[in-house]
Structures are given as C-alpha cells and as structure tokens.
Image 1: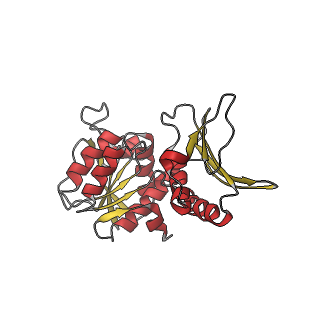
Image 2: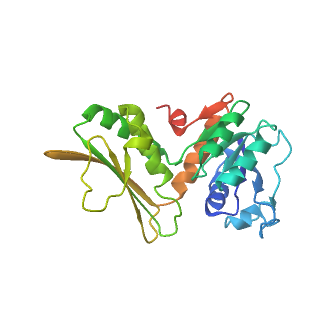
Image 3: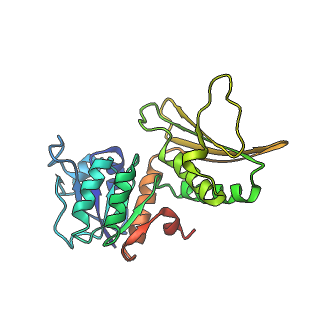
Length: 265
C-alpha cells in the first residue's frame, strides 16, 4: 500500500485524486494540503471530494517525516518550489503534475532529486506519454522530408500556451531528430511572408469551450500525411496517471524521473 499526500487538495485535480485514491486498497491518503490562508482549510478532505467524511482535515503543513511515502502535487510553480523545500528534508518522494514550470522550477527539481525521488511530467496521462514516445519515433523514422506541425486545443480558461504537453511533444521530437527547440519551433503564422521553412516545427494553440485536451502531431510530405492524436475526455486520466506514478516511485532511489520511466519506455 502506498501512503500519499495530496498537495493542492481543494483544486479540481486534488479533489479527483482524493476520490480516486480512496476507491480501492492500493493507496492510503494521509494528508490533504492547501495554501496558507486558503478559505477551505479545516474542511474534511472526503467531503471536498464528494465522498463521505474521511476524518482528514485540509491543512497547510506537511505531516511529520515518515507518515507518507509520496506527495502528489497539482498546484502552481511557486507552490511546487515551496513543497520541494519541505519534502527533501523529510525524504518524501514527489510526483509533480503542475504545469507552466520555468527554468527556476526545473533547477529546484534537479536539486531536490539529489536526495528524493521525483516524477515530473508536463502531462500525467499514460496515453499522452505513450504519444510522446511514438511522436519521436515517427519523426526519426520518416526523416526531414516530412513537415511536422503540433496542434493543441484546450478549454477557454487555460492560461498558458502552448500547453506543457505540446512543448513536451516538441522536445521529444527535437531530441530524436537533432532539432533545437529555441531555434526550430514556430509559434503560429501570420503575414504576407509566412512560408514554412525547412526543418521547423509548427506550434498552434487553440482555446474554446470546455475541451479537456486534444493534441495532434502531423507529419506531412508531398503526397501523404500521417497524424497521431490523443483526446482527453476527462481529467481523471491525469489523476490516475499520477497515482500510478506514485505507486511506482515509492520503490525507486532518489533521482529525477519522467512518465517514460514509469511506463518502461
């Protein structure tokens, strides 16, 4: 059994993590954490998740060292950095599903991974992470004669663009083909001189309605086009992926891991 803490427990993903973690006997929820001053501090974690009360109040502090195996984090970058500051001394492994991470955040993850296990991924969906692996393989196999375009669509409320998943797809392709993410990504096109240049990867972000997530990688050459698409119809796929990562991470030594490691890719 894996003992978990949910960090960001009052958020949409936090509530689903609580609900899904308590479905069976594989996980035990030992704490539910929210930001200092949050209006729902003290609320029962089960009630927040639409369940019967669990007798576990929402708190702002990590429990004492040894009371959990893994903390699952779906918050925002600043909160994730603060979490790492507390998790590393407590030897508490961390699964990070927070998006929008910058260089400062990745540096903090690298530093913490010297003493604890960390799984970080721009998308926790098992299907999306398989897509990233396939996208890189297809790009490498088809070669430079195939133009690559990445399109993503999300709900109207999503703040960052392109999505972390779209960037993850681009980075996977670049690693496989020798492209430079700084030089070869083109974010949208407009104007009278917007012809495609050889070797670029087009990035396109669409926003509207309540779309959970749709990502497509297109490989087009003269005469044919290949497409790989992943469609998310519920956010539960991210929570279930994070839980699978937590169960896997519990048995790993300190270090930084991705979902490719969890899936054995």
